Figure (tube, rainbow, N blue to C red):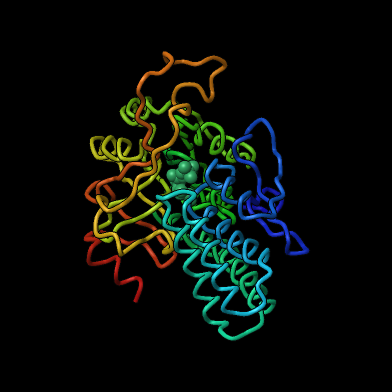
Amino acid sequence: MSEEKVIQSVILDDENSTLIILDQTLLPNEKKLLRLTSQNQIWEAIYSLRVRGAPAIGIAAGYGAYLGTKESTAESYEELYEDFKKVKEYLASSRPTAVNLFWALDRMEKRFLDEKGKSAQKVKDALRDEAEAIRKEDEKICATIGGNALTLLKNGMGILTHCNAGTIATAKYGTALAPIYLGVERGYNFKVYADETRPLLQGARLTAWELNEAGIDVTLICDNMASIVMKEGKIQTVLVGCDRVAANGDTANKIGTSGVAILAKHYGIPFYVCAPLSTIDLKCATGDDIHIELRPDEEITAKWYEKPMAPEGVKTYNPCFDVTDHNLITAIVTEKGIIYPPYDKNLPKIFK
Ligand code: MRU
């Protein structure tokens, strides 16, 4: 992916005091950068999906922990730690499903504890460095995932993807879209089909947008068209990202992903999940242990319409993610390689 085509969704500004994010709720119509300085603004940006996608949420939370702690006037290490814990707990309440949020906050806490006894300023500097490290590592990890996943693809393939696991969902390159960028750079021609991804339209607004910007052949379809494009032989592989992988390989990703996996199985199409190790949560035994986020009714009934498209007061159910059963997943592509079933045996091995 050439440098000039890279869109960065989360960065810290030069004076280390402002988090600059691309407001993903405005895409594709407006490319607006937001400058966030407080933990409240960062919480809101995560909750409202201005910054979204599991790795990008983790990165934003890392910076949020730094900037929130930077606001503290505590002078001693111990007092600062009390303030840090409050910031951490607050940011952790923004979204429940993507484990990268909790992973990044735990990593920030570990760094805090490693600086034990140091001055408040030194600890704040260390937190900034740790947040920067999380972002920089994510870039490398995504590039490696892209290289690993590309070994599964062939020139000319039709690829279906759901939601947005692209460059704007990460520090750079994306997870599920990384092999597509890399392949195209190496001269492959892929035909990408992007599910629109109701109700928040990450496929239409974000995936179709970023692939289009990069000059990649992308076709937008409604979610309920996945079956017909598979049946018509247009799809040779499915690539998706994820928000949390349980120890048995069950995988939470954007609502609708499990339906795509069921269809892929029916049509004999490989279904690959691309995930950094920070998205794998061995503490969750199975998908049943993954907390699924419920979002406001209005996202289904009105949000993207000019007028409400459902009767006022109608009951809604709006789970934001679903769990794809591990039996439906052909492989999980990580920065440590491609993991095949049995996941309960093979996932723990990559952490050794
Ligand atoms: O609600 P979102 O838009 O944050 O959901 C994002 C997804 O489901 C992505 O597929 C996942 O986080 C992986 S991003 C590399």
